[in-house]
Length: 433
Ligand SMILES: Cc1cc2nc3c(=O)[nH]c(=O)nc-3n(C[C@H](O)[C@H](O)[C@H](O)COP(=O)(O)O)c2cc1C
Ligand code: SF4
Image (cartoon, rainbow, N blue to C red):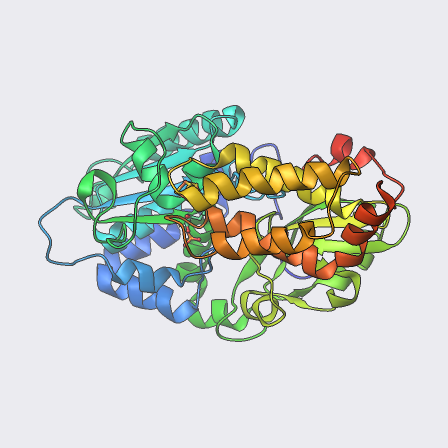
């Protein structure tokens, strides 16, 4: 089995305590950074490592940090995005609960790199246990001098604030998150300006995913060349957490080097299909285009999935077997997006609602022959025409489901009922689609 950096302590009840973390080399990276490196050097190291954001878009972390204006006299902020709202995704929650000091150390190093003295951990409201563990970790780190004033005698100060959200998907989108952090309704902002230039409280702000930040101490401790040697190529690097749910024998959280083969993951590591044969896989959280069974011999990295028209996204892998009704599965997804749309943009607000209505009538056996083209047309009109990517997140699965499973959609319309024997258990056991 490949070396693990996140899951190796999963069975140890003390993995989230500072003494355990320190015994295992914790906070050495922070010490090195504040004593030996300038902020600019840290940014260069992270750039060289090839670390790309684990929150969905895969943007290079070091490049983003470099966008923060160096000579601005405004305060700078670092935000750890711990909202983890993408259906099918449950990796950040693990880090918060089991490895909070990896995250905190990453937050402290990133804050030093951009010269932020306040960092926020915006955590999903439902993560009650994770919030408690994280808050205790902050207290432990403050007591030992890894956070607070004059960290390790370096003159660098950092206050980490845990900010609990109220459970809205849109507050995971970085600008919706910033509005919410400022105490307002989570309505995304038009970009530009990007948060690195004008973010929280109109000041330069870096928003990074929990898993992205937790990788940073590994890069400092082992070097950027070590990090970039993990994975298929220099643009897809580092260890990676994969969340597997759905119709497999062993669903759960897995860690492999970036670029794990999806087929191998499903059939070897996850023990294969629970019952029946594979029909489809959503590889990167519910927002990304679906793959058919014959497309799964693919490396789970940013560029390989993009090359076949999908995305690594948040690496939430949802496996569907032949008993899954694809109309029902898409309806489930679109209901979610219609419910979570903030309503600011007409294409997203109206488009998601109309897609739900159309899918409901196909499900009821009242579908029309033109409905598949209509779904496709609505998806096309949402795509790239909205303030934030939630619109695209709703459109991409719809367009791909209709394109790849059109015959099944047409059979619903022709027969006036579902042609697939439904297995309702997916909603009860793995409620993500
Ligand atoms: C609707 C929506 C929800 C999102 N939810 C999350 C989330 O829960 N966690 C997250 O890290 N990123 C989420 N993102 C992506 C963030 O906007 C942002 O790109 C990310 O936090 C940047 O971190 P990274 O560069 O480290 O990936 C979401 C994006 C959209 C459009
Ligand atoms: S795309 Fe949807 S969620 Fe995003 S701002 Fe527009 S209406 Fe709101």
